[in-house]
Structure formats: structure tokens, C-alpha cells
Image 1 (tube, rainbow, N blue to C red):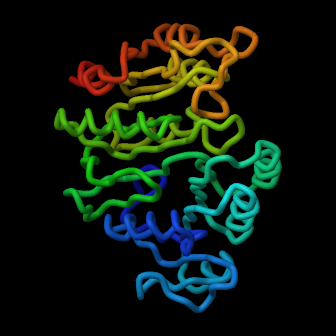
Image 2 (image 1 turned 135 degrees about the vertical axis):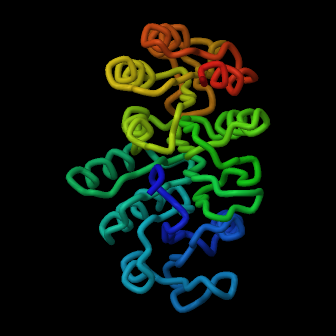
Image 3 (image 1 turned 30 degrees about the vertical axis):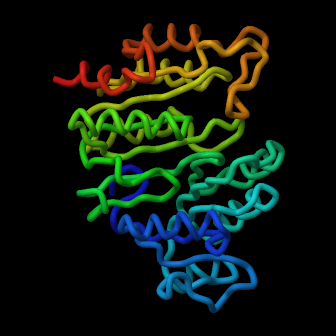
Length: 297
């Protein structure tokens, strides 16, 4: 398997009959993703796009279709319960796209996931993609809201807190003729699932990945922890970009976790940590692709 998902991954969409869920489920189907089920309570027995069965519960979808990964488009008030339902049903990977999930709800989710094998990406994230061949993938898997056509199959991992900057980095790489092995948008909320270190470990072990772009932002210390892990463990070239360099202290910029408080979590602090770890930092978002290219032999 590639990083987290591949062409054989069987996906269930929670919230498939909602406006956003249906829109992006269609896009994932068009990309070639194996969307085998949808879940909307009270809609069990219906079909989506005349071929995807809809169930009332995730547990039922797993039993009937073998779904193993869930993509959540449930509104914020119910998103945490949707994650917990998927984990309780034995889903191995939950990708929560939903923005605005209350932090205390996510604390409850994290407590529930302790000791379980289920991994979580998000919330408030663009999702995960392992690109296939061509604009409409063959042999790939797109689970989320990213524009599939900009991706190109290759050997560079993209790991980001920001959806928009993920797409920008991918667009630059593809324009330079550099394909991607997998792209993971982990989201920028203060309490979430997989972090930079978790994903860097996966990329470091992946035989189909030759290098990684890490896109961070102000606030918190996730980037500093990633830099320390890279310095001690990473065997592949890494470049980075830190968003929010001009943000005033105390001002939240975009993501719930992107705030400088108590003088901690500044862009300069994070850049210094990456540079001390031997990571080349792109000076601007327009130079993410070229910075990575400069590291390749």
C-alpha cells in the first residue's frame, strides 16, 4: 500500500447525501476512487449515483461492503460522533473534512481513539490523495476535496496543515514535471489526528517516496517537533514553508491553531528549527516547488 491509501482502498462517505458530501463523492468517483458505500441516517436502502449503496450506519456499511476508510462530510455539531461511530465500526482510517468542529468535541474523540487501531486525519483538512496516471486517475485514490487534475504520479510526498498551500505546492511540482507519491492534508486545528511526525515516519519508510515538502504555519510547536524528528531520523531530503510570517501576535490567521500566544509559535522560531535540522526553507509560497527541486539529485 502507498501512504495511507491506494487504488484498492474501499471508501465510505459519511454524509454522502448532503450538498458537500455528494459533490465531493462524485469527484472522488470520477477520479477512480473505490467509493463503495455512503452513510446518512434515515436514508438506508437508497443509492447514490445509481451505484453506491447508502446505509443508516457505518457498521452496516462495513459489514455489507468491506469499507475500510471513511471520509466525513458531517456538519460540525455531529462530526465528532461520526468519527467515533466510524472507529467503533472498525474503520482503519477516518478522514474528517469538516471545519469548525468544537475543540472539546475533539478532545473527546482523542480520548476515544486511545488504544484503538483507527487513525484520524483532520478535522478541517483537505484529505489524502495517492495520485494515479492522467487527469482522471487510473490506479490512484483521492479521498477529500483536493482538485485531482493538478496531481501527477511520482515520488515526492506533500504534507501540510493548509489545504490551499497543498494545492499550490502540488501545482508547482507538477508544472516542474515532479510527481507526488502521496499528499496528506492534516488540518490546522489545535486538536486533531495524525501530526507531522506521524506522517513523516510513514514517508520515511515508504519505498515510493524520495523526498518531502512540509508546509506549516504559525502557532503551536508541531513544526519544532517535526524538525527535531527530522534531524534525528529522516533519511530523505525535506524542504519546508511556514505560512503566517507577517501575522501580528495574538491574531488568529485562518486556522484555529494558527495563533501566536505568549511569544511562542512564531514563524521565525519554526524556520530556525527547520534550518537547524538541515531542512531547506522556501522563502515564499511561490518557491516551494523550486526549493524541493533544488534538493533532488
